[in-house]
Image (cartoon, rainbow, N blue to C red):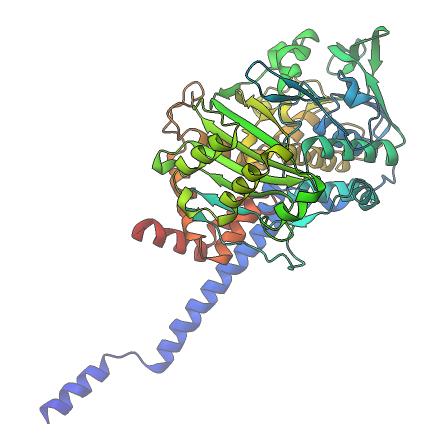
Length: 563
């Protein structure tokens, strides 16, 4: 009897079924409510704030209410300048690109056939880029999805030009290692939803964009010259009236309704142009740091008879950079390397280091360096097989080398500048923010700027004209979209003691971000949803807030705690 009474007493303490149901339903409704709020916030707040995905659909569409001005002047004809000119051609009667280098302004629209190679005193054949102002001109690149998305909007027939150059956009199935960790590939090569990339050299991509501008944007012209200074308007001192240009034929003034600084790492607006026009009081802070990154690339020309043999060693269907290994900073490793295949005959191996001085050029040097890098024992077999192949056919595969120093990284905080900036001017790309080139996001950053500016232009009517606060609108809207790239590359750069941090900062800045990123990478080694979210954010097609998904954060927290 006592046991029955005890059991009854215990049963009396259990909530009624109805109460359990209410609790469960309440919890489910709460979860759905929070989930719904997050989805709404993502769609209407985070995607527009942190990405260009909402602005892209209107890019390249004709205005129906007239143009915003008579003439736009683009100072610089590299990647940012070409994209800016194509975009401005939809908003202004005419556009002119002013570019100092003949190779970028003489309408060169065919595939670069060669580059100069000189044999130096050390016995190596060293390449001399046609574009002396572009450090990575000869390097193999992987142009991220926003680049191809923007080009297809600006140039609807661009696929014809891709075919002309024999270029095939590919799904990103890159073998990406971080020390000993390889992220699970976020997409299968056959997945139609996989964002496409362009795996080609910088030289070929720039020629492709220039060809598209020249072919499809009839109101864009090119001038071979150097912008010397900005001209301030006498009628309206808040504006620029044009730019002063030095050309082979003499000095001239190019009048402008709108001016874009695309002078690249020279950052001429900040260093010279704004001061020359009397806007020096409007100059904001420029953050600079020096990662002391040096790298060397060696490129082998594979003769036709050997191409089938080398292609058997390259993962099926891959072009461009098909393997990379970035260092795991927590191990003290400071070296990175990547393998690339392009133009159906060129095999490139590049090695870089933060604060290091070694620049391997010969195959034995490459093998020794790569073997000594932390995690090399986990490399796929093809890493070593390709070196064996090159060594076996050394006499038949001539090669050239190219050494470079990345220089200082910088970010000009124009979004914090006073309202005294010229109302018909902006700066884009490297002219505002220079990123570490080893992460391959420079052109993507310029595309983000151009699409952001297009969105500003489309927010006003032709009758309203260019708003007086246009620079402020642009830089404020741009800041959160680009800041992820700036902070996301600066944080790992600061992990190396040889990096000279920005004024007022130390190498400890960004430590939490570094640890969090490394934990995400380790957790994403076998977790497809996490790897996909990480890839989409890194590719600038999704907001960084996607990584704050509770389910993903739980996995990261678990990895952080348990290791």
